[in-house]
Image 1 (tube, rainbow, N blue to C red):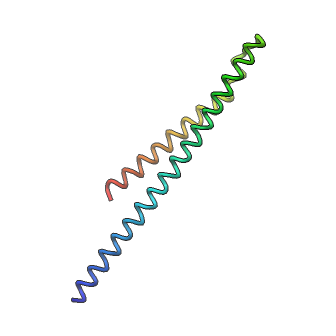
Image 2 (image 1 turned 135 degrees about the vertical axis):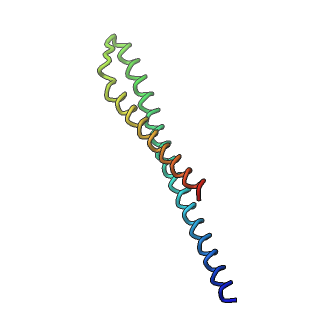
Amino acid sequence: MADFFEELGKKISDVASDIGKKTEDTIEIQKLKSNIRGLQRANERDLIDIGRMVYEKFKDSEISDLDYVVMCEAIEKRDKEMERLEDEIDRIKGCLLYT
């Protein structure tokens, strides 16, 4: 009878551990998704600013492509970071499927 309770205790402990790991993974995924949303919002703000800058330059008849290089590079950097975070989410989700 003692073996039964030991075995039951071990199984309960294993299940609790699995639930804890899945909860941690879910929280990590939510953090990554939040980071992605923040990066997307920053890109949207910069794209709006680029549009405003282009329009102002157009109104002043002085459009120069070099003015936009810094913002475009920042957008590209955030796009790459979003891809990396999406890959991390996929990796974590993959681990969830196999546990």
